[in-house]
Length: 502
Image 1: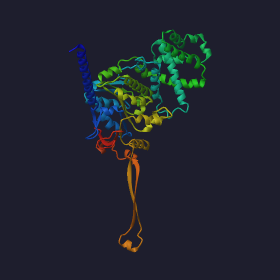
Image 2 (image 1 turned 30 degrees about the vertical axis):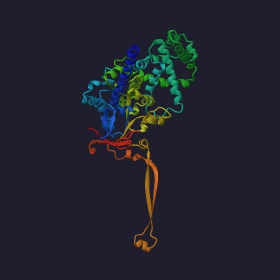
Image 3 (image 1 turned 180 degrees about the vertical axis):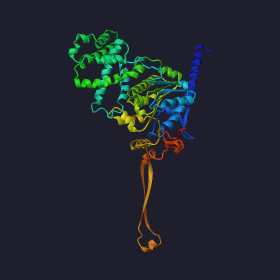
Image 4 (image 1 turned 45 degrees about the vertical axis):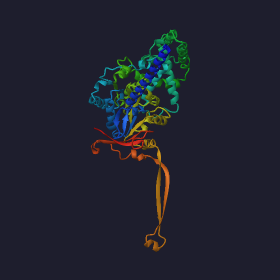
């Protein structure tokens, strides 16, 4: 056999080997995605594939059993699964002992890390994480402003009709400060940001003051100009310097003070108390290490206990881990990442919709527990809060609906199942025309038939008759599981299920 024939046979054998290897890998990946997490019924299972298909939304009134029944059972299943890692944001003080028991019962306590304000030795520098992987000024700014959304939870409104303008201006101010500091010093800290913006010149007279020119703000600009940089970096720096030396000093005092109020509101939390100590100094663990060891991080700083500081830290971990997941090129065999948020409205922000739409291909998902649509609407800082809420919730591939307490959420749940054509039968009876007809029971009657589209499940189904656990209900909680676009074994895309609180 000639050399070229031998080479051809060898190449063909290699090609066939690659095809069979890919088939084996695809079969293995398929088996992995079909791994069972929880049983809905005798014939229906919740699988890894279903979890990655947009994650899971659990809704129900306070006391309806969502955390103690369906939430707890799914948490146990995920803790048992050694091919998962994730983030848990505690919403209540009792969440810590609950999760510790769940992992202990599964003999997985070594996989649970606890980040809290008092006992834990864990530290994690938010801005250093945002600046990793060549993070530019825009990425660091996005981190700060997204975390800052948590501080506006429950403000009751969207900030007035000029809110969007001032939010955009706050972002510009932070972005240009980050650009200068990163160029001048190589890193960005929350303390430097606060000092740089605080020392900015407010007018032309201050710009000419020799004392100001010897201050921190001016020295950072000088150092930034002296540093080596690319043409693009020089262009971006010039824009940032023009902002602080020309545009900012010329702003109207009222506009300037409004912008500064929002910026300093965020930086104040960043630079004080446990927030500064825990997330603005150093880091002694990483997301990559958690992924490699299949670890879960429980952030035990519930806003109900720690207020703005707790909301700030939780929002920071959530955003940064979401960014980490989206940066990761996941492949078959890699662990599944889960972001778990009870009282999810406390942690919601405008990045969630973007994340949930992309995370599946990165083997990421979210599990959100909340009471109602209105809870999310109140958390969104936008004039389009309702649309943003619907956009976010529509991405969840599975929804467990326990008993609801408001019509708006019940109607949303009903509409998510669609309508079907129903036949309505009616009729009427006319009085007898004669004594003879009346004696012999001869009556004139008419019948009617009509068809019209009706909801598959009426809103009232979600508000009445679903058990909420406790001794009176033998510790059983009822729910409707909805899986849009994919029927269960009953031929419907919804299923009536019961979960035990034990």
